[in-house]
Structure formats: structure tokens, C-alpha cells
Image (cartoon, rainbow over all chains, first blue to last red; front, side, top):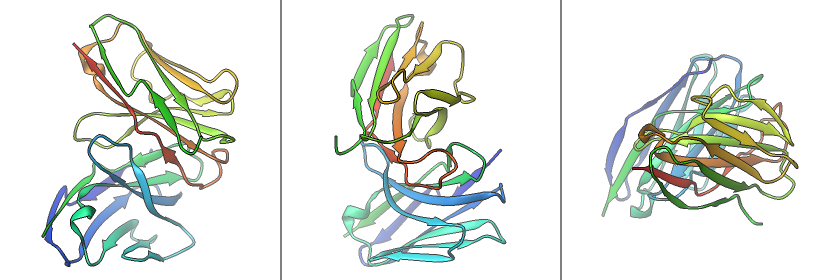
Length: 112
Length: 116
């Protein structure tokens, strides 16, 4: 089955810096890769996603890149703000599978 | 409703007690998922419904866990004879299409279960 590895587990940056979180997946048939932000006491909130027919997608300060050959995808947050502080999860969904498989999460701290 | 709604938000159960957790998915969503999230971990898949059919229950940790979605809308996750290791956040999620579609999956706020 699918296995998703996520790095780093914690990331501390200064306000205004960029943050990059990386994930690898094992199932070459996976075709959908969302990123979720989870704040304390809340459920995961989708922030951006990418499908396997696209290499990069941007939404304001957030971008995701996908390298299908290497089976890895990354989240890029530019001009970080304190409100970006949260736990971020990557996930992958196999073509024939029913469920998203999540990474273990990255705790991002943005200090002002 | 506007989003996935879960109740209760918080539940404290004595060991051995049965609990039932409810999920109201986004109206019209075909797919419904249950996930379990332990403290400091990512969500782990429990079970999947397409309308009223439970198509995948491979993630249910034991036969004490049971889920249903009898009319293809509201779903209930039931845990019998709760154990301390069942303490976790139980997340419900829904998506518009069936499982073959790579479509957006929306999560609820979760039900926080503590077994004492």
C-alpha cells in the first residue's frame, strides 16, 4: 500500500522567510496530492492540492510542486506570517485506492 | 450545511463503555471517510462509504469498531467496550464524487474521545 514520508517534523522560521516542507510517496499509481493545515483543536483544512498531470500549482503565497519520476512533492510558503503557524500534513491518494494516506505532519512556527 | 459537522466534539468515556460518534457530511457528497488521529500523529484511515455502501473497512483496528451510513447521508462510528488506546480524535471527511475521482476531501472538526 501507499506510504508517505514527510520532512522535517518541525520547522521554525522568521516572519517574512520562506518555508519548504517535503514529502515522498511510494505508490507510483498515486495521482492526487493535497496539503492540509491543522490548527490546535481543529480539523485539517485543505490549503492546496495538485494532481499528477500538473507539475506545479500556486495560490498566492502557497505553491506545491510535484516530481512524479522521483515520487516527491513539496509545499512552499513565501513571506511567512505568524498566522501560518500550524501543523501541515501532506497526503497521497492512489488511483485505485479509496483513502488519502497522510504523512506524520510538520509543525511550522513563524516568529515575529 | 456548509461543512462537515461532527458530534459530540468532546467525549469522555469510562473504559468498557460504548460510544457513538456522529458525522453529517456536506449535503450531496457521495463519499464519506472516517479517520483516527492520535496525538501528534497524522490521520489514519479507518473506513470508507460510497453512499450507503461501506466499500472499505480495512483500517478499523478491531471488531469493537463499527460504522454505518444507512441512508447514504449521516454516518455513525460506534466503538464498543472502549479501551484507553482508543483515545484519539476521530475525524470524518466527505467528498463530492465516488472513489475513482481525485476530488477534494473536506474534514470536520473531529470528535475528541478520551477513555479513562
